[in-house]
Length: 406
Length: 224
Ligand SMILES: [Zn+2]
Ligand SMILES: [Zn+2]
Ligand SMILES: [Zn+2]
Image (cartoon, rainbow over all chains, first blue to last red; front, top):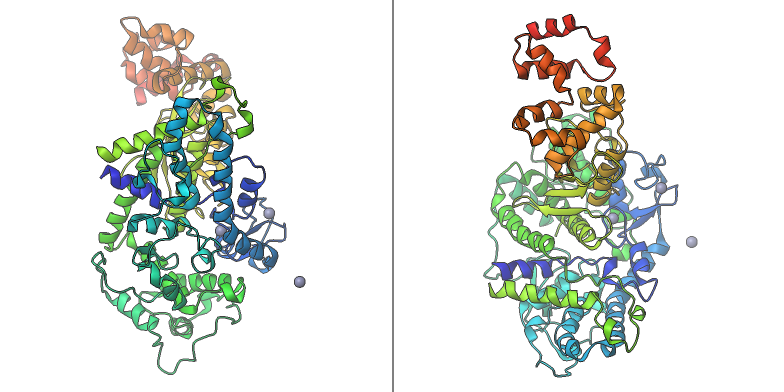
């Protein structure tokens, strides 16, 4: 169970600017400046407000629905001010391609710089433990189980992932780096899972064999072939309503499915609409009309938000209308999940995440490289040869191993 | 992982990695959305030396709705309910912004301890105490820090703890009252707890003592 909490910790590793060391300068700042201040992820459909502050379109639309001000500087703001930021969008796409590679280079560089400065006794341990941990960060998989021969000078880059857990981690760590899966420049790198390994689809979060992941994404996430850990799904009326619509049925005599390069949907003034008109509004977009009037309104509001935010992305990055519907459905399920009894999965989910957070809060995350510049260590001076940073890393690894045994 | 969980994950990591802010976070129960935050009382305030714990709930629509926070540790402060720990702070209400974080909000609470806003009180009685006699207020706040937040012993009140009647003296000190005043009305035959309660409500402290007649106090005591 404790080992499971570790797995969760690693699986849930969320990329952020502190993945990069403070030195060389600029990388951490670069990563940070390409992230939205609301969600903390790399900009997804970046838009700029009149004040100049930039956010993901969906994030800022959400924020503006609560309060008509810039979340950062609090200047008056509204959705009409939003301007697509194409330069940042391009920049983020390029950074997603380069990020993993640069991360690996910086870690390797860091190791190269720190290694000769250790005392001989430290040296052995570091060769065994520290690079593994660091490589795990950089390469995005857990090498701890690959147990290199102690004292050998085996290069970390020769270690290959074997288990599905490790493979899963590769994708999950790159949660917002979707592009890498299909067109990564590091696709020849050693840390690629084998074809049969299950990986988590970054779009629908289902487990899919690695060999099929590209096809799966290209086909807009069809259900993966049945596997033994399939969660049973509840089948209430709502569910059926949704799945009918997802299948592309729509209402009788409805207009053809909208293309993904359509116009933004104007906001409706719901209080002026009769129930019948409201239903029409939903049916126009192939949305279910289950629930009561207030459900319809929230559903339509959320739909408008998702739809319009999606249009703020370049056409090649946009999601299909069906993907947006899945998102809306997921959002509704999460929103009502607390009151209704979709609990089965939720409980398990929270339990898994509890383990993860417990691990997070009990031990500082091993992924974080303490702020230190390698050059701060005086070369050839044995007394300062074991800076605080690395021994602490080792201690963490030790703790983690104890946990696995217990 | 949903966006809220991803963000909370990042925020916890951020607190862990920031060694300078001295802010800590831990889980309370099964949910990653129910946390306990803690920070040291700010230096140069009556809260110095104390360790203050805050109950944190992360709402479903976080970060678009504010974090829900209240003090677990009892705090004597005009903007914090001395009974429930409820906090009166704008960013926890209308002035919330989705770019605020667990860390930045806890830092705001820390600075609220430095600069009370008695004009927008959460605890009217404490605010009255703050307005009428700052030094007496600070003494009580220091005493609360000592007994509830593990702060250093306050001078006057601290000594009282070691006497055999320490428990009773504590009660008076916690209410920020003077023993002599309580004794005076207790001698008239009123119950001590009643006397403490009435004197606290009347803000029978500092310069106010001269303004409130004995008759007025007795009148209140008879009513209660
Ligand atoms: Zn965002
Ligand atoms: Zn702004
Ligand atoms: Zn142009």
